[in-house]
Image (cartoon, rainbow, N blue to C red; front, side):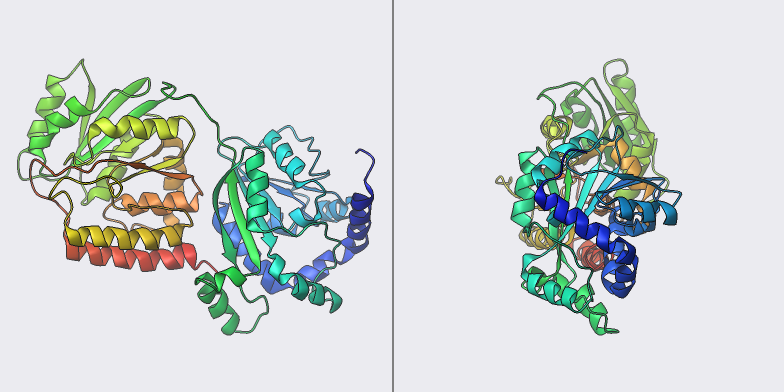
Length: 477
């Protein structure tokens, strides 16, 4: 380790002095740490590879139950205690501004540590040694509005005394991440009332803390970031599977094949027929036979019900690196699919959602009540997910097969609640902290058949899903 600056030497001296008392302070502030652990557990699945920077005595890292956990800290005394308490984990004395690790991790945790770093930008630069495009960097920090209260808590021995170098706000942290090429997936604040009072603390932190104005007063800020792998436009690095759920869409089947472009290094089209009454299945079989040798077209028959079930069946059989959904009514033009391919293949986003609410629509493409409903759900879901989403109900959604497998493995958290298929993917990608990008499309009126959506019946289902998501995503305390 290089010669320490005066500031670093003072921080290290303070950390060494309190190392033996750290666990006692954690127990004393159990309610704060309980909340912190709940946040990280929500975002980090058990069995992940986790690196914690500024791990102290290893308490947080151990609670995350990683398959491989590595903790680094500036203080030798902290690391000694951590190694003795948690021998199944790995700990090293290391400066965050001079990482010497030669491995990558699924998640990197930087919890309440940025305030003690001398050069935060240098620390973010060093993270590039231990991340891959799928790695998520999870950062928590204290709001500077709470500085006088935290100072008082230290004086009353209610909080562990530390020598801080920095007080940062959300904009400061995001700016430093962006300077080093990191992409912020989401950010926000949480934890309004750090003192434990039965029922009152639970109500304030679970519900009131997420409301406008109150949220700005919260103690803990959080940021989720990634280091994207940028690729050239028009690359052919990936194969594509286009899943087309089809129920009573006989008149659109051949057009779907003719109008879907070849993308990447190979494109397969998979029709999933859903118990039609208009000979859609026979038409799918005819088209598959007619285009054999010219296009890779397959078909499946749906045993269950609903678009969501059809999408999952198609995804399970898909062979492409990138998975796309195209509604068989062709109201989203298949010719626009290369825009979705480019958005995900260049690394700009990891979950690509179509939006019909930018360009003018054809007459009768969407009725006024449907438009109003879409705008309402846009506002609600943007608030719920912590990422902007303008059109939750557009049928065209794209993600990689690798990320879909991760989503499916964690599906039990939300359960089988979504007959549409849209929100299973939206909620799942939100929990995985995937970068959401929207691609505007020109929404067309359907040329054949009638919509399978009931405005009032399905609108009520959507309202119930909003309430459900509040408790499973937003109100996770």
